[in-house]
Length: 250
Ligand code: NAD
Image 1 (tube, rainbow, N blue to C red):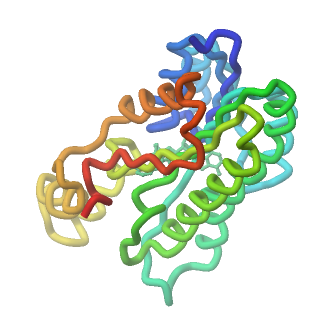
Image 2 (cartoon, rainbow, N blue to C red):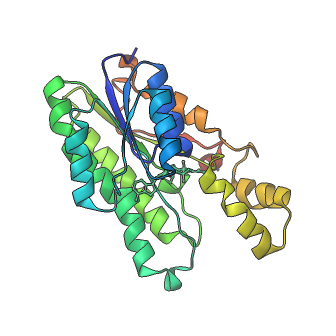
């Protein structure tokens, strides 16, 4: 049902973004991928999804602007690229704070302001922001991430109100722990730091807050993104949709 629509998914060479790109492509949308990675693997993804790719570093506003100019009119904008750093607030590296705010929050402001004129002209658009359970609640040692994700929720609500009469919706999807490289790569370090087995890290650290005790799968996020693109979802606007196994219900 998305034939003729053009979707840009940031941070889509891996994990959740890739699953969203695959799900949107599965409904016929044409895809612009973004993100870093092995050139050969990205070329394979472009072939698989009949997509183009921008390697723009979204922490750099000039590169965001170039990507948006190259992408042309976008009907579905998915702001998904994000990164994490874990440290106590008084020791939090200032450069990491700046990078996380730039990628997880400011980049979404830039892509949104640049995509909106085209969406308004067409009278149809979807802005879907990958936030997090950490856009609703905090955890210690994640000051920059939690601040950026709470900010992304605020940006989403503001855009939703401004565009409410234009056929454009803006919503957040807020996952709990999703099984992606971002999460998997934390396991060996945490095993070492805490002297735990892989199973213990997964169950007692990562899934401690997720009542289902199961990771969300990236494909589930893809399905929710597709759902938000349906015309029947035109009145879902400014929402922050949890997909966290009940984490934020507690
Ligand atoms: P991932 O590490 O698998 O993928 C991140 C993507 O962002 C990759 O494509 C990477 O190349 C790209 N990227 C990184 N830095 C970039 C930059 N400067 N410019 C452009 N692209 C850049 O991560 P993921 O787990 O799929 O996370 C995707 C989003 O989902 C993030 O916003 C993350 O905060 C959010 N999220 C993830 C989880 C989880 O448990 N995995 C939970 C909640 C929210």
